[in-house]
Structures are given as structure tokens and as C-alpha cells.
Length: 507
Figure 1 (tube, one colour):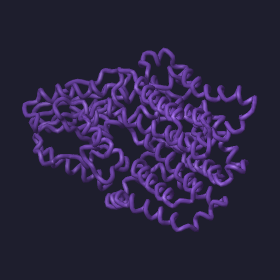
Figure 2: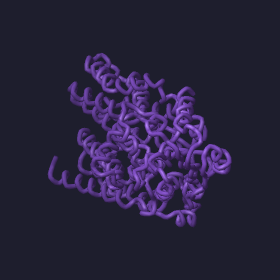
Figure 3: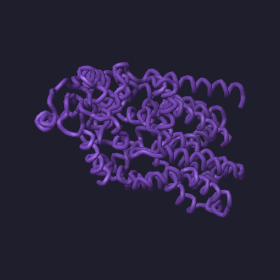
């Protein structure tokens, strides 16, 4: 790579990290899901109820580095940056010039990935793994070197161990290959060697799923019944336009080039793969962001095709406009597309957020602020108040902190100054109870909708009971969540917990 190109790529990398560092207002805590993922570092396993194990490995690394917010936010930013780098290398592989590389990098940098890469969730590495898999397939077709097919298998396996969503890449790819001349690749032994390698690499997690009665299917069923049921197919397709709004012409150029250009003829299967993947997602009523990983490789292809078509006098005018368009869209959306504004600001400008569908939550209804933002408030307050309650109890070391959901438990465990290990009957926490300790006290963290009868129902089992405090941040999704103290149990708490866990696992 030439020195000039290397410096430009470095500039994009630095700019990416800088932008990620300024996109979250200091008034927000970590997000609900981030706490669960961070807690998985304390319970390493071959799989989890909610996600595969890859994120827990990153969480463990974060823990070794000090478990600070800086490192929590560093890794999704890193994965987003690597996605940009892979797009740059893909353009280089397709013989794109510097203009094409700048266009592709701009389209990736100034896109929905800025929002996605603010959160420590599997989604950032999911997008990276999709992009890398496509990149290695292109390298394999260009060079006929078997090593690239094996590298495809390795990164597919990593993507699978991060988020099962990458299976949809394969579901879209297979019919695309079968419909084009690329199907001749299926006669090559390295293709089947790579498939075998991928199966071997993901087999520990598959074995874990089998040993635990495939919780992924139970998770998907719950997801379908509680969240995906509110997804409208037309909305899924419409929302695809918002992820790379400033890059739509580049993506369309990729599809045009893949379907008509002789130079891109050997990659024509990617045109059909794109269509089939979106059709499958639409049919299954998937969440709109599941498809984000599909686009970066098409931005790379489209950048090369478009810039090649604009090597003329008119192109001298159009090329700078195409490069500036993603930046312009980002500037126009900066105030509403990222958690860089306070809840008060959002409420004052609610119509702008509502018009873009940002106020719609998983329940299908509009709320005051975006769901992700509401899920980033009230957690530190909750943990501080649980710490106070914990210190009021006579024998805190015999106290079980029981929460209603994984967000509450994870946030307490992350922010607590007392080293509390809160648990819940939600998500992976059902497997993380320490029942070797004989509990005589209980701190109950109860969600606002279900708190009214808590004292009446639980007090008879303890000598002392009281409502201690609650979350007072009115913008938090956990607003009103209450903290109850129960001391000197009249019953065997451990036995009751064991019975409840048995019911949950049998169900």
C-alpha cells in the first residue's frame, strides 16, 4: 500500500475512534444488555442462554483491563474500525483507486455503524464477521488459493460463536451460488474442507446447546412472541434505508454492477445473495438492524463500480459530491441519531425523533425517548441505593439480592461498591446462583409494574420487612423500580430458590 493511501486510512481510523468517543452524553449509564454481557466474564462457558460465548471472551479481556467504561466502549469501536479497514482492503482487491477507497471509507464511517458501535453488544462484531467472510470469498474467487476458503470458515465460525445471525449470510449465499456459474466452486475439495473446519470450530457451542436442550430455540420463541410480533415487514424494508442513507447510490451501484457488468460477472452470485437474504429477513419479520452486516461489502463493490463509471469530465463534479453526501447526512442527523442529547432535549424535539421511528419501542408503541436511551438511565442510581440497603442489614454476607430482570442484576453487579453479586430468574442468571451460602436475608429489586403487592406477599416469611427506596429518574425504563429489605427469614430461602429454579429449567 502506498504511503499516501496508508496515511489516509490511518486518518479514517483515528477519526472513527474520535467520533465514537463523543457520541454518548455523560448523563447516560451503560445500556441494559451491556451489563449482562459484562457479567458473563464471571461465568465463562461454551454458551449462554442469550448469546454464544464470543462476547464473554471480550468481557473477560475487559475485566482484565480494569472493567472501566473506556474499555467497554473501546471494543465495539474497534470492531467498527476494523469493518472500515476490511472495506478498504476489499476495494483494493477489486482494483479500486484511491477515490473509490475514500468513498467506501466515508460511506462506512458516516453511517448507522456509528450508533451501533456505541454499545458493547454482539452486533458490532457481527457486522465485522459478515464483512470479513465476504472479503475472503472475493479473495478466494480472485486468486483460486484454498487458504482464503479456510479463512472464510474461520471467520464464519467466529461470527457464529458471536451471534447466530451470521447463519442468514449462508442462507442467502447458497441460492445465490446455485443460481450462477459460481456453483462450479461446489466441486472443489477445499470448499468441503472449509465447511468441515467451520463445523469443528463451532461444535463446542453446538454441543453446549445440545446438552442444555437448545436454549437458543426457546430464546428465539420468546423473542418472536414478545418483540418480533410487533415488527411490520414493510417497516423492516423501509428502515433499511436509514442505516446507510448517504450511501444508497453506492449500494444501488453495487447491485447494478453485479447484475450487468462483465468485470463483476464472477461475483454475480452476490446480487442474488443480497436479494435472498433480505427476503428471508422480511419473511421472518426480523429486527431491522439484523441486516446491517449485509451492506459494507456492497459499499466496497459499489464504490469501485461507481468511481470507474465516473472517470470522465462529469465525474470530476459528481465524485466529490458522492464522498460528501454521507458526511452531510451524518451532520444533519447528528442531533437525533445518537445518544448525545439529554432526555429533556429529546422531549422538546420529539416530532423529529418520532418521524424517524426512533421513539418506537419493542412493544410497538411510541414513548418519550428512544428505548436504547431509556435503557441507559437509572442503573447507577439503582446500584447506589441497593448498596445503601445492603449496608443497613445486620448480616449482609447472608443476604441474597434478587432482581426481576438481567439489567437490574447486571447493573448492580457492575456499579456496586460492596461487591454484591445480584441474581435474577431471567436470562443466564438462572445458572449463576451461589447456593452454598445460607441466606437469611433478602433484598428484592422489583420492577415498578409488579411492586405493589411485594410487602403483602413476602413479609409473612420474614421477621422484618420494609420498602427501602426506588429509582426516581423519570426517563429511565426502570423508573419506579423498588428496593425491598427483608431480614431474618422464617423459611429456608435456599430451598425456595432451588424449587423455583427447578420449575424454570423444567419449563
